[in-house]
Amino acid sequence: MILLSVVGFLVAALVAGLIVRWGRKHAARYGNAMPQRFHLGDIPRIGGAALLIGMAMSWGLGMWQSSQGDPGSLRLDTWVGGWLLVLLPAALGGIAEDMTQRLSVRYRLILTGTSGALAVLLLDLTLPRLGWPWLDALLASAPWLGVVIVVLAIAGLPHAFNIIDGYNGLAGMVALIVCLALAHVAMQVGDRALAALLMSTAAATGGFLIWNYPHGMLFAGDGGAYVWGVAIALASISLVQRNADVSPWFPMLLLIYPVWETIFSIYRKAVRGISPGVADALHFHQLIYRRIVRGVFHDDESRRVLMRNNRTSPYLWGFTLLTVMPAVLFWNNTPGLMVFCGLFVISYVLAYLAIVRFKVPRWLRR
Image (cartoon, rainbow, N blue to C red):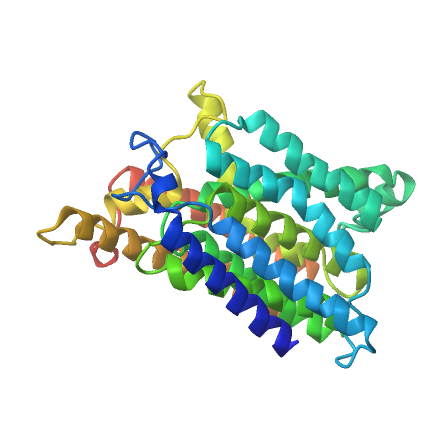
């Protein structure tokens, strides 16, 4: 498991470094008028390619080790190849958008939906329970509902990560924290194979992050967000399906920040009569950037923007940890996990309204 993680980290870091070295000219094609742009200069945004290659090399090495006698008893058999096939439509679609800026939201949704459908067909993935007796009885009587939930989860989570991918280190650190939390619980229930894939994913993310935070030399782009989203969705559903002790609300609480950010974004755009696919600058992390992280002074404008960008992400890392810690502590306690999900939703809405109304405590403003 350690070797796979080291390989994932080194390969992702090396490929990311090559992209930083040779991809700056292509980065000039990205428009300066985008509402979600909070940086100056031409920065490559195909870090998802480095992430994908690092994960593929690490997972491939695990498959090869298993075929040679499986010295680590990880049992990374041919099903891991199925995971890679499921990952490809969404990941390649995201990278294509990063390269061309011409792939509409509709086509990207189709590609992530294709990944969801492949997960059902190739991996026999389904959601066996929801944690409530009457809902579990409904799933038992209508198994197709579990399949629909799987497809929606795999199709939707990549776009949720794409929404929170706005500042240096934000989406990448959230993905790394979530992967480590999932790996911890996987080890708790003895699922070493799943833990190995998650540790490799976290390591590849770390290889990307050394170029992304704090200096912002490379962005994950849609491709990176889609890789994180599909891989984490696969791992979350597999963990629940393969281990009856794990509550289905454990991954829900882990991922409540990007999931609720997406739901809330759709709601506020619908209220204003705007299509959910239209980008804006009113997401939670963008409000923190504009109205809380303000005390940065530097003569060079580019340096000032970078420093504000870097100071924004830690606020959201802390917000994420507020859900990750109880999720890890109560991973098999469905009622407790549901209560914490509700508390997060209430806290998010109250915090959002406080920022909008300029009622943020002085000690939070920097």
